[in-house]
Amino acid sequence: MTTQHYYTTVGSVRGTCGHEHRTREAAEACIERDGRACRRGHGPNAYSDRRVEERERVPCWYAVATFGSGPYAMPPRGPWNCISDAEDAIARWRERAGSLAGTIAAAHTVRLVGPFHTRSEALDADISDAPVVCSL
Image (tube, rainbow, N blue to C red; front, side, top):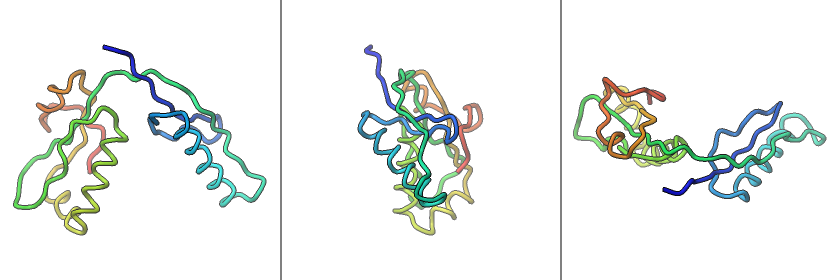
């Protein structure tokens, strides 16, 4: 298995962006967006103190675990190998489901769970015994 790397942005004042960018260019674009947000909120001389850091990706998997079922389109199950990919998939599902997404999340217990060491562990995740990242 080859070691995978990702890029993130970190600053002593602004903190981290929380993303796992696939390329250095994407991380630099994230810094540019953060800089625009700083200037928008704090004036033309404000800037982002974030810098790009390359990090090693620890192999782990995340999945969505639910309790209950229904005739509606349930959220995607996964698995995903980073939280940001899972969040993106859930956001796309919320867009597709529209106002029904809130109803589904309220009627069912829906949780993002992980990390798991293998993909198959993530697929077998049960809502009652899996570490919870967040509830939807």
